[in-house]
Image (cartoon, rainbow, N blue to C red):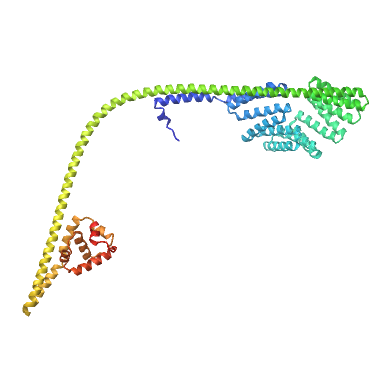
Length: 556
């Protein structure tokens, strides 16, 4: 639909409505570029809170999610869902984590955010991996690697290779596990990513440990430990120290095993990593048990059990607090949403009321102005209409008078022509009657007179017969007939266009409604011949049996 805004804004009422609409649009749709950038910066901060303070992180992410939805920022919405998924993942609430990951997945896939989609698929795969659903995890990692290959994202490819190798290790497919870990190692080396290289060394050591190739396992664990020590990555060192202690214990080198396991326990306590602390206590208990020091074994076994119980209790408490937070937030959100709806409805009501009042005022002003102008124009129009009416009246009277004159002239002309036709017809009839009478008398004289007069009398009779059949009188008759009955012969030809001149004469006389004897006299034929002529005429006109010939001709 094409709208002529130039014409619309000429109306004061529409000008006011247009200004109000522009004001409302500017209020509802502010500039989004700066707000979107700010939301993404805030999301970077909220990600750092996920492990440290999950409750605060959840509140922050929910607030950013609502802000992103208000701005219709699809990318920021997807990142918010992904971060909520991470928060649930670290709380071991895998079902809720997957639910939010898949929400993010849907948006990333719809808008072709390929690298973000692949990263999200890796997170989905990790969640299934730690939930021991290795088949689904592998499919997710494989889809991520295919996306990273298309975009040539080497860092993403290396990470996905590592995850795939770990998954094959859990499926006891050591050949594939080594293959993908080596692919990951090659990519991390190209990128000179020391953290990634250290992680792959640790994964390779774990595979060799499972295969009981303990020297190779120890070599890769030491390589990973050296890299993490050079970067002072104490968090990553804990698990490696535990793994080295485990290898020494399996090798029968119990004293060295105790050294590394105690280092792992000490570092876990310092960094508040209860899972690694419990793992170290368990390894220490096993080593002391193998050394025959059952008291120490029992001590570390109980210490590990207490740590596990503490972890279990804290996890339950965290999950309970998180669920309580979720419930409170949902309640608050519902209250806020209802409040916002009410406020929005009130604001719209106020705006609508203002608009209606302004429009009513403008309409009243417009109506009053138009009414005043209408009164002035009406007065002028009445004067003009009166003058125009008088002029039209005179023209109509003159026109009517002219038409009456024409009608009277036409009537007089028609009446004159009718009289002329009637007179002409009577003249023809009288002439033909006279000639017929002369012919009869002469025939009588022929019978009585002497033979020498017969020749001359026959010549007179022949002359009378000849004059009686001349067409001139009929041509004059036809001219007068067509003046009275215009287009009659044209209408007749629609029924039959093969009529002879004798047929046309008969039809014309029938149209004049003459008697059969008068028609026979004018045509110079007998009554029997006239009946035959009428019969032939009916055939040519294709009249149905029972239809009157005279009535048919009168209708033409």
